[in-house]
Image (cartoon, rainbow, N blue to C red; front, side, top):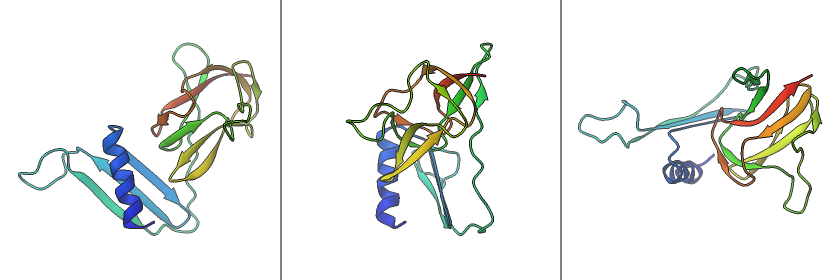
Length: 153
């Protein structure tokens, strides 16, 4: 990842009012945070604090975001494991991966999130039925944002 890519991410963060961004790849990790208490004396809170990409141990694998139970409904939320743009289908001409009522298993691809021109498949990680779609196609999503609700089976 070069400086041009990092600057583009910072511009997207400012444009979309995103305060935190984290990206992990095979051999590096990038974390950006805006508006925190960290900064130089006398500087405004709109500083962008950057942590340079750091090498990661080869044995470390990012833990998947576990589905979280939705409040009082018995449903489980599938949350975004990254920041990016949410897509319901592999291409504009294709049918969506899933709709409300679709039965899914742990390996079912439910959507794609595009991050830095890379298409990342999002899997359901559990068996059940899609009960709600919480994000519109083509909209930006943040890390941890609920995408779907599933009734486990």
